[in-house]
Image (cartoon, rainbow, N blue to C red; front, side):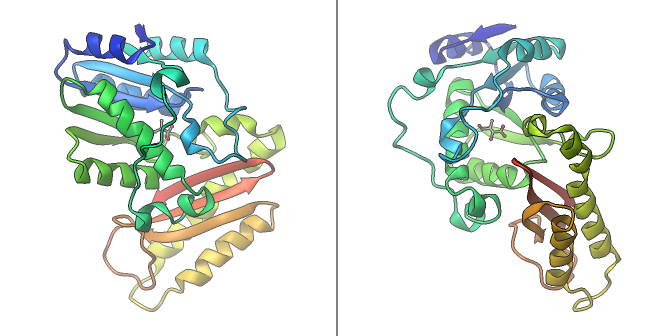
Length: 283
Ligand code: PAF
């Protein structure tokens, strides 16, 4: 596996390929990332990963400084799935000047849910993803693989690809879960043993909400707001601090007041102790 530390090195190496398949990450890789890389491996003529902990997508109160940096074991994992190229720039390489030019995503998508609780998060994500794409896809189009666990991120990035006419197809990988159902996340490592046992309750609350949505028949017969509140109350009763548990339309994350035939998704974010977890389930 070639490890490129600079944009020039990466571009020079990738100039020999027509269809890079790329998985951007912030490192501390787990099986969820590796599943995305397995998809990338069969989706292009060169499999590329990046590791870059992107300061722009963290609030000053968040865990940028303590975000787990596990470069050597990440490299072993990348080699184990046949990754061909790792782009691992340091901050001064990717942001040689203060990054004052930024991507401003549509507030209707980016200022709700995660964006409401993490203001500026999607500006940071879109800016770094656009920049990474300019580095990886400098000579060609290609594909990029993102996980469905970050449902809102995926939707916003797809919208960015379309509106900025980027020659990159986004493909997705299903959320990878631990045997008990907890969605894999680098932040699961922050959980204590007791919290780890409890953590599955977020996906269980979403599952229960999704099941009640599926069981509801006909417009007006299902009180969405009451079901969302009940799901949040059930977590609160177990010591969680939920930010949101909500039923939305898959296509634009707008709220749902009556059941129709559109594809829906339940999304949730909640804090357990010091750890904030997110998850979603398509209905
Ligand atoms: O999903 C992530 O890990 C990050 O938001 C991404 C896409 C690598 C951008 O920093």
